[in-house]
Structures are given as C-alpha cells and as structure tokens.
Image (cartoon, rainbow, N blue to C red; front, side):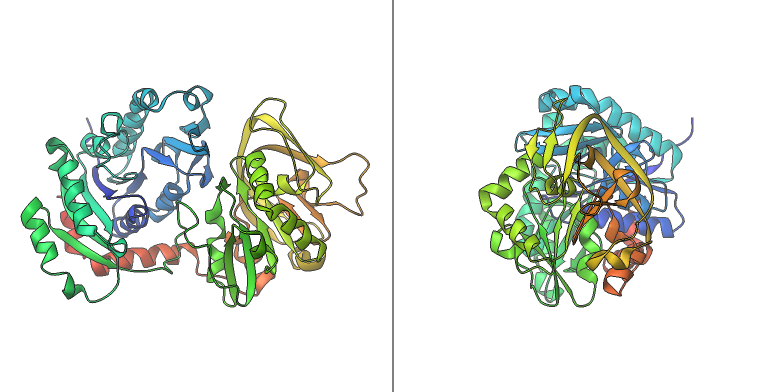
Length: 477
C-alpha cells in the first residue's frame, strides 16, 4: 500500500483569525519547495463559491488549489454550506446540491457526511505529497466537538501537524490561544505544533515575555508573528468587513444585502488607482456612486424585501433616473427585472425593481459552469466593453428572458444566450468574475491589477519571511 501524504493543518481561535490566508500562503510555499500539494477543508460555510469540473466548492479552497498549483477539485471541499437564512443552509456535497442533507438537523448531517470527508481526504493523500488543511471557526467550540467534522477530528484523521492562528489586533490573543489549547481534548492536543500571531502592528519585541510564558503554560511554541497586511490581494472569504470606505475618486458602491454571495469577485476593484469601493447598507450611500453594483444573492426574494425595508430600493430607482451606470450580477440581474417566478419552490417568488423589462423563472436544477464570453455592441458607459472577451463562471437557478412585447430598442442582449442584458446605462449579467479579467479592467478603468500568481507568490514570500523555511520544513517532520 502506498504511503499517504503528510498533512499540515491551520486552525484558528475564532473566525476571521487568518486561517484562509495562512493556508493559502502555505500551499504556495510548499508547492514552490517542490511538493505536490493539495488543499482541503472538510466543511466550509460561505456564499462565496467557485465552479470546478464536478460542481462548486468554496472560493477559499479554489484559490488555495491555484496556490498549490493543482487543479481545483470537489474533494478539496467535500461539504459546502451556503446560508439562505439565519437557521437554514443549502448543503452542497461533492459539488452538487443535496436537498436531503439541506433539511437534515446539523448533528445528524455531520454523522452522515463524515464518511465522505474521510474518503475525500484519503483520496487526496493518496494522490499528493502533502495536504494543507484549513479548519473552520475554532476547534475549542465545545458545543460542536461531538459532531466535529472539520477541525481536530480531521487533524487526527490526517495525523496533521497543526497550527493555531489568532488575530492579535482584536486583543486577547494569548488568552484565546491558551483557552483554545486547553479546551481541546488531550488526545487531539498532542497534534498542535505551534501558535501563530496574525495582524500584529508595532514592535515585535514588546510581545515578550508573553510568547515564552504561553509556551511554559502549554508546551507549545509561538512559531511566528505575521504583521498586519491589508493589501495582500487575496479576497476576503467571510463577508463585508468595512462598509465605511472613502468615496473619493471614481466611486463604486456595491449594495451589501444580508444574503450577498460571491462578493470576493469584486476584490480587484479596490486595487485600481483612483477608484474607491464602498459597501452600501444605507440608502443615502447609493446616490454617491459613480457606478452602482447589485451583486449576487443567495436568496433574491428575501434580499429584495430587505431593500424595501431599508429604502435602498427607492434610492436605486432614483439613481437610475439620473442616467448613471448600474451593473447587476446574477441575483442582481434578477432584482433589476420585474417578475421572479418560482414554480418549483426553489428560492421564492418576488417582484423586482422594475428597471429592466425582464422575467426570471427559477428552474429545478442549478446551473454551474465555466466558460468564455464576449460582449455584443454596448453603448454609454458600457460601450468600451464592446467585443471584449472574458472568462467567467455561472452559479444559478434563474432563467431570464425579455418580457413579451418589449422592443429591442429598449432592451438588448449584452451576452449571447440570455446570459447578459443591457438597457440604457444598466448592464445585467449572469457571469461571475467579470472584474477578474484584465481586459475588462483595462477597458473600463485604463488599469489592470497584479495577476493572481504574483499575489500568491507574495503570500508565500510573506510566510517565508515571518515564519521561515526551517520552521515550515520542520512541520513536515
């Protein structure tokens, strides 16, 4: 029997500690060191997803696969939970929606999917030299330890050298690390090889004697301190963290409804010179935009209701009357139309904003695909995109078409096959990833951004500088 790959795992003291960033950086570092690397996260909860050959996985694991210089695969994120409400999530198992699992209680579901997690992990370990694993939340959530399928149970399954990372900028990092360590069962605790402090600002020498005292209390060394690095270029995974950015320069305002999805596709916009990005949760923010974006939504009808409760719907209509440009992406496309019909009970029917003469019908089966697209002849603000080709992906149930009797003079196809529409200054597309294409950014803004490989190499350089090659090699035994 072939020897299984070694494993390094990154857990955190809490969500947002820096697990995804560190895992991605390690994947690229070990790949550059000559290992055949695969990422793995047993269960991810996120509405940011990417399309791979077999279906969809969390965006973080998609980028980690690219960092590892391997082909993204559903085994790398066998369970994806896509929140639809505070107490309800759609379950994606090995890339495909499972209605049965989606209605199953949490603890029952964990018992059912564990074998899939085991099989996926073992399959990757048989194929690669090293698996870099990301945990979720915190392994010290003792209310969830009995049904754990993503943290220390996975570490034990892979015999993974485990790091615990904590966000020191929040304060209390040493208490978080100490408490996390002692709340993990002893038979799992022995896998913890080191602590990492993330997002540190200031003089590292001022941390002493805390790391030494923490090691005396736990037996675990602090292996490195990662400085605060806001402009690393990797999309944030978990949500909108800053909704008060400056509106200076060319202002792009993205409406941040509660069930926003695939927001990571807009990360490149904040790196363009002279462009500011603001996430809008108040009506008054909308009217300050030079470009208004309605992004994807995991529950369009519910987010439309939120727009109406907040008055943002009226602000969007008023903005459109000013003749300023609007972009709708996927769920945003559906919101811009009139009718949302749901004959199969997939997502919920609703009434759109009525800014485009479109009707959306939700199909029973979800469409997940990647492809190349080309814009037709566009006009106004969007005219510079005429003929531009770009790569993108689709994740949707909706099928959208022009309402009967509507003239093409008022509403035209922007992309073939009903994938995109244009009406005046309003462009609506089903394609995700538009701003991840250099040709699109150059046409709209006259600038591009560093390519993804450069960003991933920068992350590897970052951990090499602050953790060091000796530490990273030693984790492999």
